[in-house]
Length: 140
Image (cartoon, rainbow, N blue to C red; front, side):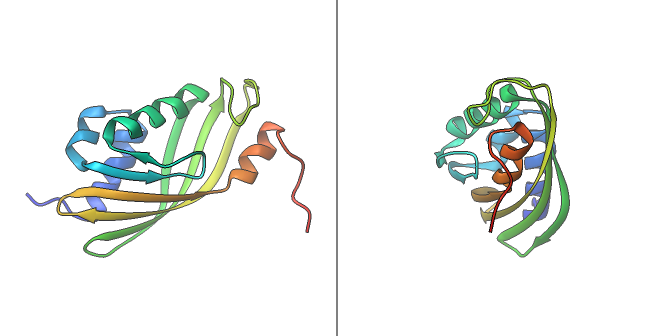
């Protein structure tokens, strides 16, 4: 059965991010998967990306990604997300606070065949930092 771009992205969040399922990652990600996230530098390849997943889960207990909206074509997917976790280790230079944090993100995927080839993430990093007490409010 052919896996649609929509189904690939649903597996990406439900299995790879929320359950940290490396087997699913190897099944749905291209070997040269490119990930550019708001929280750090670009990651290339499945192993590099899975290291990033582990780092986020280490910093944020109960980390989950919830899809709010998903729009897709044959080879592109755009997602509006809510991301949540409990700050349990250093994150953005801030030692663990035990605070529950939540922020929004917009994420853009490219597929190649039946694999996710690239992901570009725009997360509300300012909100994360404010919730952790790393910065004051935004001023215009």
